[in-house]
Length: 361
Ligand code: HEC
Ligand code: HEC
Image (cartoon, rainbow, N blue to C red):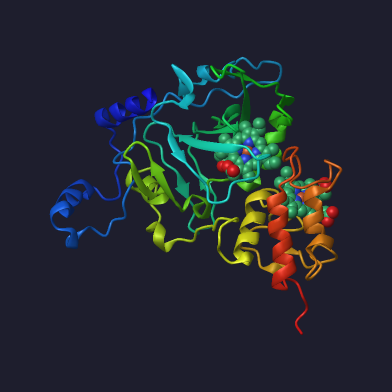
């Protein structure tokens, strides 16, 4: 609560000179209260202006044998509220993704911190990776039920590269401590939680996948509730309005978006979205199968061998590989300890009922 009030104060005091896409928005909103018929075409924004830069800034990349640049506690990173580390620091910008990566059933929350005035560059195509400025930090918190277990930071260091850091929450939930850089396993009730090693982060957050994984136009093109203003608004339109992009993309309504893999969109779109979100950070160009959403079905190589046995999900490697008994061959590789049975059921239903990969009659 405190951090919420604080961020409102910061917003109110902000003299940030970033250029929102629609500088007229405030006047237009006032006018639209009296003349609803003449409402501006500008889509609603969840935030009125860019918050002042947060205290969450990139620390120096540690060197071999000297880890002291990595803060020992989460509260010392500046990315959480010093008075209540379960809350983000003021000025951190929250976001959600349409198709989250399966994380052993944990609930996740995500925030971005950009250096003062710096902006995100998106390539020309809607599929292009987002390029966050040097000095950026992205934070993701994991809960099992009500209990915070881990907070992860992806940091873009001065050398231009990304690196990941993990923090283990204390039982009293007052702070989290830097995880062993070789990774750790801990038990929560009956569940074993795996804290990835620092090099393990990079198996998924690889440079060829753009360093960050969820920050994609299709993933962020969705409506979110913004507590700061108590509004529901699209995330891309909001980021554009507060000037987070170097060049703002078109209105979100004209851009592609991922469906909810467990919603009610057609099975094909849900299954391909699931594969993109959970597998394509590794399975992209040059890695067989290529499971990116935009790769044609033939191009994925999924119709080869027994990967998809037409009409028979239970016999298809694409499904059995998700609950392989041997964790070293189970997919997603290095992804945790709990099998995503709902994801396996989705792929099974796709194969069982849609005739995918069946030869033309
Ligand atoms: C098995 C693959 C995998 C591993 C290992 C992994 N991540 Fe991720 N991570 C993902 C995927 C996929 C996303 C995007 C989807 C989401 O947020 O649910 C993501 C998202 C994130 C985000 C939000 C920003 C972004 O890139 O979208 C942060 C921060 C993050 N991970 C930190 C870490 C850190 C730190 C580690 C190592 C301690 C790590 N991750 C290990 C797959 C992985
Ligand atoms: C962290 C990287 C990573 C992620 C994430 C990942 N894979 Fe893999 N995958 C690999 C590697 C590496 C191989 C090569 C074989 C091996 O090392 O086990 C592979 C091989 C495969 C194969 C071919 C092997 C076989 O037995 O047919 C399939 C199919 C596959 N993965 C499916 C998936 C699916 C489905 C997902 C998502 C649910 C996924 N993978 C996520 C790294 C990954």
